[in-house]
Length: 639
Image (tube, rainbow, N blue to C red; front, side, top):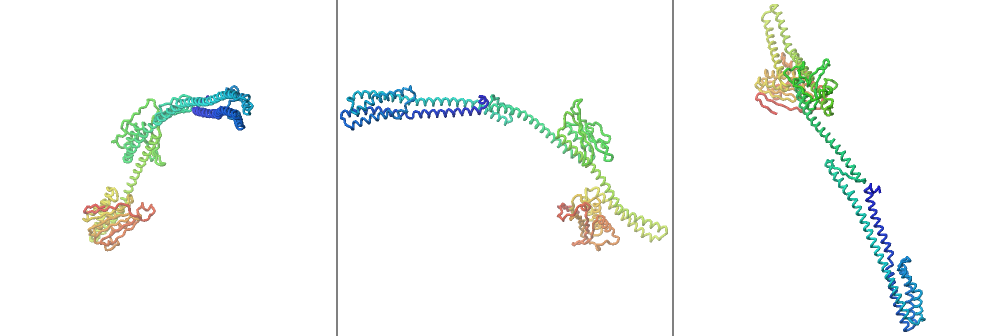
């Protein structure tokens, strides 16, 4: 019983077993009753034939008495014998119930006794011809027929009773089956269908993220246990889902805040990398925005002195005074009112110290203060690490730019000193020797005609020195004003186009940052010297300057359509060509003079730039630089 109370499956199985058992019992009982009534019809027929046989015996005896002969006697004897055989036949005897007090058995016993003890022997004697009169035997046969009718009636009632028993048993088992089915359906409806609907409805609500409905099932069966388990699970899922929603909301807010912080870092990077050497003015607004967004602060930035490695405070977002080392008194980035954090008076703060380093070089430190009860999240720490990396990159680039500026300044000074030494200083030395020679001639009272030659050399030397000085001033003015070699050469070609009154075309096919400043100066001086020679001696109506980089070599060509040069070697006292060759040797290259096929002069300089020497030579490739052609004189631009 406890199992049936605890298990719905057990109750359903018990109901099915009960229905099956009743059906089997009903079939067995019906088959048993039907088997017991199998000979009733034959017994009734046999009893009916006894009644007819009795009348046949009477008719045969009367016929024998009317005409006694052997045939009629034998016919009467056969009928009497047949009656006895039928009365004792198994079909009739087996249909008689075995109970001793059954009316049908009493009727059959009386009929057998009457036949065997009285009527049977009398009829046998009458058939043998020993009886004198048949009329008394006829009266006994009529009485026997009455007993046979009574037995037939009892046989019919016995068969009808068995049929009624079968009907009653069928109705009884049908009612019992209906009761069991009704109980099973009631149990299935109230303990299976309704709870299952409630569980399905609860599952649909859970699928819609509604964890409030409950099944409230009572009992000890499987569905009740499942319902209570689902109620507990729904409560736990509701709590977990609410917690997850809260975490997702926090993560979403944190992501939004991280995106805003990344946008601030992105916008601040422009001012950091483009703000010159004023790190305070470029970083202070970004740090204040991050303080407001991340609810942290103050933030303090300190850098190491590259000379003595001492900490030097650079920026503090909570400072209301200008630093002592401030170099720009027109900047007010440090004088903005500090942001007041909403903290308790006794609230404790902690400091996150982040290194500002580039590789193994420690450039400084970044102090980030925050409330102790507001711990920094992982995303905030990653953002602060990105901030320290960005500041490190900005500081490192700023120092590298300052160092590069110093190196560039030293290179410019070295180039100027070399140019002055190679040109103007030599000319002045030559003039000094001529002046010393003239003084000795005057001390010796040399004739004025002899001194006139020295005065001529002095005049020529002064003109040459002045010309060199003017060329140097023009060269360095172009170099300082122009953003690069291309712009400087473009100005040079424009200058000589105006001086010559003829177009000077310009072709440039060099990759960026190919030449060092020293190499640029030498290339520029060779171009100017060649164009100056074209202007003075060639009487040209057209000139062109082209630079291209191919097979790891720079090729410079200056050509014109003038009268050309008679001797491609340097003629005596032609100092311009000597200086050009000297510069070519300084570059580690070679310069050649030749005639153009269409007439005129062609000057070609070929050398390997210093940057290209540091790279292994590669197979020849098509030049990838953009070619620019400019025709000066008529001011036409062509691609």
